[in-house]
Image (cartoon, each protein chain N blue to C red):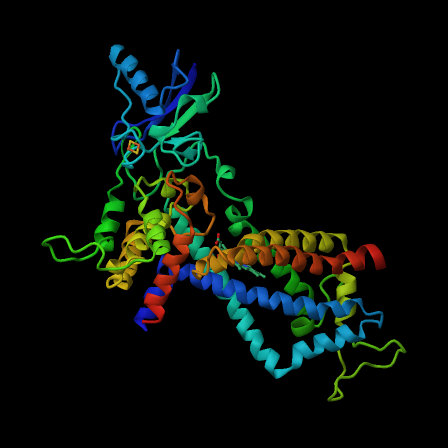
Amino acid sequence: MNFTLRVWRQKNGNDSGKFVTYQIQNISADTSFLEMLDILNEELIAKGEEPVAFDHDCREGICGSCSLYINGRPHGPKQLVTTCQTYMRSFGEGETITIEPWRAKPFKVLKDLIVDRSALDRIIQAGGYISVNSGSAPEANSIAIPKPIAEASMDAAACIGCGACVAACKNASAMLFVAAKVSHLGLLPQGQPEAKERVVSMIAQMDAEGFGSCTNTYACEAECPKGISVTNIARLNREFISANLFS
Amino acid sequence: MSWFLKFVTSSVGRKFVTGLTGLFLVSFLIVHLTGNFSLFRADNGEAFNVYSHFMGHNPLIRVMEIGLVLGFGIHIFTAIYLQLENKKSRPIGYDKVDASANSSLFSRTMFLSGSVILFFLMVHLTNFFVPHRVTGKDVVDGTAVVNATKLDGSALLASDGQPIKDMYISVATAFKNPIYVAIYLLGLILLAFHLNHGFQSAFQTFGLNNKKYFPLIRFIGLILSIALPAGFASMPIYFYFILG
Ligand code: HEM
Ligand code: FES
């Protein structure tokens, strides 16, 4: 397959950046999106040009490193997959593909398509944990957790923290990310002692980082590669309201 | 009080206030529409004039009117604040956005639909509130506001013997003018947009989203977003096209 690529190129955080157009030929339909970019980079290196910088690690859809805003959507045209699990067969022959970095005030572009997502880490540091004493592992069956609760918590825990929710949201809100963490920990008995403190601190950090507020367009849920549901945002709202007004 | 300020200025708290005032405004619309249906009585506007006199003079209603002004004021204030803050969160935008792939048009145009409703509200108040409560002069044709009469031509009086102003004739005059009819219909279409997203959105904001009953909330939102604007639209349509 052949494609025209419009790629955002930016030397560093101070550079203003611009789109550069590349032609790429003879790409197998079963090439992954990132492999296609690898092929482009090899061609660029052979020509003595600077390769395109992009984030990636596991390339199997589990680490949350890959990003890319492809043809107006985070992680490309297919639902429930990351960019690394997107294949060129999802595009049309000869299609022009526009590739941009995630855009949000807290996500500064570091180089080309790589943005600094450490704001998400700071939200986790603000409360996305449980405090337990170290030592030998406790007996697994000593705390009974109903199956539906465990399932709901694990569904939320599927969040890989890629930031697609922020990238998709017209307000660059990180609510789905925060909601996933708050639900994942708060639903389980081990997370409940710190539940109120957690939701208040994480929202405060989210606001301080400059993420926008949720207006319930639900674009995040539609674009999340892990299918995290916006019912988690409702839980977050509920917990935040009750932590502030009723405690 | 600082806990309260901290809550309402947080991203979630701001939305909570927008949602609460939004739902309060929906309840106002339902009452307003129900009362306005008296326009359709074939009694020379008597029932409607009695109703609008009551709304303008009953002390309890006057107190509730303050609540309504506050409701609108706070809703508009938080909405503008929300919009400005959210615009700041993405200083550099995307070149290509495929928003229709992941969200509804109604959800993305809440500020636009709200702004058109606000414009409509200004026109609406100058049409009826300002002439009857402030200037005493109709804005549409410039004539003085007159006292209402019954079908038999005798004066329409309130229970305390005061003459009742003829609001009905003001409505009829405004809705004979195609420009006003067009502004009203446009405002109501945008109200439908606003409610289509807003009603269910408020419940999500309060954290009341649950797989069991959320489909019902969405359905009620859909019905309200059609029925309320259609109910209000029936009035300019009736005066312009049927009584014409
Ligand atoms: C009769 C008049 C109105 C009614 C019934 C109404 C109702 C609502 C409701 C129910 C919401 C949802 C709140 C939430 O998601 O938590 C909302 C949100 C909003 N309203 Fe209104 N509203 C009205 C007038 C206005 C006006 C005059 C503006 C002026 C700018 C406005 C701007 C907004 C905005 C920006 C939002 C939030 C947008 C979003 O969530 O995406 N509304 N409204
Ligand atoms: S590279 Fe790990 S999820 Fe895509």
